[in-house]
Image 1: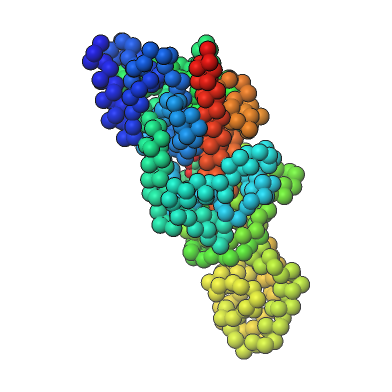
Image 2 (image 1 turned 90 degrees about the horizontal axis):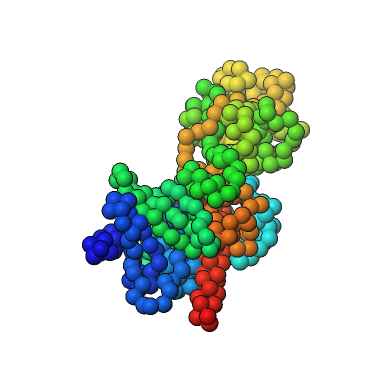
Length: 480
Ligand SMILES: Cc1cc2nc3c(=O)[nH]c(=O)nc-3n(C[C@H](O)[C@H](O)[C@H](O)COP(=O)(O)OP(=O)(O)OC[C@H]3O[C@@H](n4cnc5c(N)ncnc54)[C@H](O)[C@@H]3O)c2cc1C
């Protein structure tokens, strides 16, 4: 049918916003609306059609992987199918600034140590092939100026995630990646000759297309659909659970402290379901008091390392905080006794040893917890009270009653197990020509740019592997 061909061309053009492959494209589609076989762009030559890679998901991993595949094998048809808007998480990431990667860790073992899921497996070749420095070079080569903040987080100098999105979209367009948005891959199946049949649906009722692909890259993030596709192709799924969240705390007095920050606390999480001691459930770092509980890097880190155990215990446990981790109990007592003698005529709520590094609001909170009178002078405070204050500062416990709704850095732990893929190529060990990249895998990092780095590294390796296979295949075809 004549009408069919232009209809799909028009559709792809409208939906892609990137580009079409006018020649030799083997991204063939069936539409059940017309009940007819349609080809998105027909082969104009007599030669067999070119191979096609279908990427499920236009997030960081999918777009980066698609660009790499098309760079290595310019002749390969690369089609990214995205159900929503491409790079939507990049847009909201890092509070709209996009923390692209982390610039402080070049050693693979140290870098891998920032991934609660993946810390053993990622010590090998993964970051050697494409690590944070390679990511930074890639963006710089594409004209994006980056800056590294003192804590290692890397951002575009514009402090705008749009800079990263514009760069990726422009590279994809330049290379000829086809992007189809507003379409969902709802089913996949392996067909003969290492090929895949891909079912694509639009929100419009009854709109179904079937595409045939030589290579499939699942880069669907934490979407349930993505896990289902992986399972359909023979993979198991490690139960997905949230990571990087804040803690709801059952303490009405805390509300008064909302907004108070502590530059350094030691936080230890105890859960009823965990009997053995887990070293990673003790973390040191900055803490922020919110109106519902605790947030800040130290809490997000605990939530990441304890993601699975917290899920098992229904997000209930006890948090022990040491507000002065650099001083021991004896030091604290000595400092308090010295302060008592030196400031005998001052009211206790009005002064405290500066070595504690605390804010007055918190000091008063501690005194309230101790039940001490607001007019008490230092001269009259008992030694028992001083010992009790010191103990309180070293170990203050709070009841964790749930998970906060704060979603600034939310990621999902779980997904396709790393034992089922080869990290050298990102290819499935179960299904040939099937590749995975990004958060769909059982990899997640703590905050600081590590999650995007997983997406860039995985996308790059998968894209390069597919590109190499496609190049080899086209050479083979030429020699036949
Ligand atoms: C608010 C927020 C802020 C963050 N900030 C940072 C940060 O600053 N730095 C950092 O390192 N990490 C950050 N992260 C984490 C980071 O965004 C993710 O780890 C990263 O986006 C994962 O990339 P991905 O490509 O694997 O998945 P995604 O970015 O989730 O992309 C997957 C894409 O696949 C699409 N999709 C899924 N299923 C289908 C289907 N069946 N058919 C078609 N399309 C499908 C989805 O619509 C989605 O666009 C943040 C996360 C959140 C939520």
